[in-house]
Image (tube, rainbow, N blue to C red):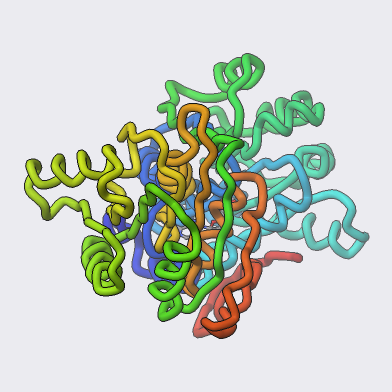
Length: 402
Ligand code: AMP
């Protein structure tokens, strides 16, 4: 789903573009319309799903477009750790860069200067306050925090906050907020105590569940960091070098499925294709050939990534990085079914590196990067993304401290 479909303000769209987001992730697709409609939401979503932007984007949009009191803190985002507070504040700054929405991160461990700056912002009123519970409670106790006009409360990583013993601090803060407000709660897991907390603070919440199953342990996962032009020679090489009997190659578009199948056939690889342009009869015939192992290599779009039951596929190649973690797990789950072993290899082009890092975040581990065989030349470097916002004509009056 494209971000244009949410009806966001043009200034926010600029921030989305500058952050390099092209399509909404599943949690964003589900959560954003609910928040825009004013609903309370409880969502189970882990880090790596894009959950931060799922609440920041509609929040920024609402602050830009809905009338609100000027000298009050408008939204409170409560998070378990200072690291997360800083990370969310950086996201916030990037996304709101072209707007006049202000934000401040309030967390423990800073020096006296930080405290003074926090006090000033909280008593004047920031649009979005991103805070850890203990530090926020300390400020509220001093009496200067403007909360009378607060309209939005977000609890992020709520399960972790309860595990860290923040229940009382959170309730203390909430008891100082206006009763009429919109509440969002995000949590990686949904144990009973989270449901209890939700019952206390959310009002008729909509529920969103983005839980992804972890891939099967028996799948050997590898990746190659490549230039686009290295992909086809590398596929041919992998197919020729190993004696795989049954190989499924995923491409994200019909065009690349067709192109790759053509190239493989030219290289005398017995390959066929499956995608939505084919008649149902033809699809079934190709699938039968592949299942019966008369056809060793099948190139497919994601129509084949879910629910299709084919045993004994020894290798899955992601010719390009799937859209999100869910698709990745489904695609590679086509191999190592039943008791079998299997390998999944992903090609990561330069522009797909961030997308793959998101998937790795979701998997909770890094996938091993294989070295490209020498004859294909050097591949690009795998650069770890750290969130930066582009320089430009921004006029954010953000008071973000980092
Ligand atoms: P989160 O799950 O919120 O911690 O986000 C994980 C990473 O995904 C962050 O680096 C975000 O900048 C990035 N991200 C979030 N939404 C998108 C999107 N729609 N497209 C690309 N990257 C995204």
